[in-house]
Length: 312
Ligand SMILES: Nc1nc2c(ncn2[C@@H]2O[C@H](COP(=O)(O)OP(=O)(O)OP(=O)(O)O)[C@@H](O)[C@H]2O)c(=O)[nH]1
Image (cartoon, rainbow, N blue to C red; front, top):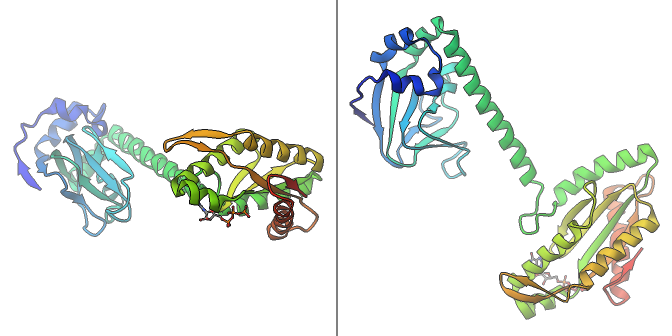
């Protein structure tokens, strides 16, 4: 980080979010405390390993914030007007993240002590700081939510994964048992999928799996869960639907795929696929494993009967 000249521009300071509506007199007294610095692209400004005694105000350029490691995806991007280092400023601990300049950037540096002195006389500064922290907390919460959701989703098809199935079964089986309502499971397996891959290529197979997931998902209710259970195997959990109704739904799903003779994909036109389906209804004391075992048994029968049909 290289020191640079800064013409002590009060107007520029007043435009920074941290100093919004802070009394001009107070800012004027603070002006001589700022130090301007230039960062090169790729330069690391803060790391959790180096104690930080400054608050940095970004005048120009761009900074990215990384949690845990610089190899992770950045969690936020800071632009002119933002400040950085406020968390270690408040708790006087190591920085919580890595902050890196992604392009040549100019920052103003203010020592902790100078800002602390100003904060004693400026409730507005403290309010701005609190608002900044609230923004950071909200961003953090959103990131927790996003990563939690991502951890439950199969990246190829966008269907839920097994981790979600365990969670949602726990919830729905308890709820349905408590309300005396039924809970059904459909287990679907794409027919002759090895041959499909062999004939059209693995990428075409991937597109076919996406087609299956989209076709199924479009016909389900928000409270149903479509789960990619294994390679070409899907499970659907349907709360509060009786056996006959589930059979009708399963048949409709099977038929909707059977009807797709071919579909367009980025790899060109591809033939559709059919599915075999096993149906099982939750019984008292069923665990997820025992319900899956019965759906799987019914699916096996459907395969035995020649595929592209529903059993159970
Ligand atoms: N393209 C693609 N293929 C996959 C994926 N996951 C599993 N597979 C393939 O799915 C095929 C499943 O083959 P099998 O278990 O023999 O079943 P099948 O050929 O569908 O035969 P039946 O189920 O008896 O009709 C294997 O060739 C796997 O490589 C995936 O994510 N993408």
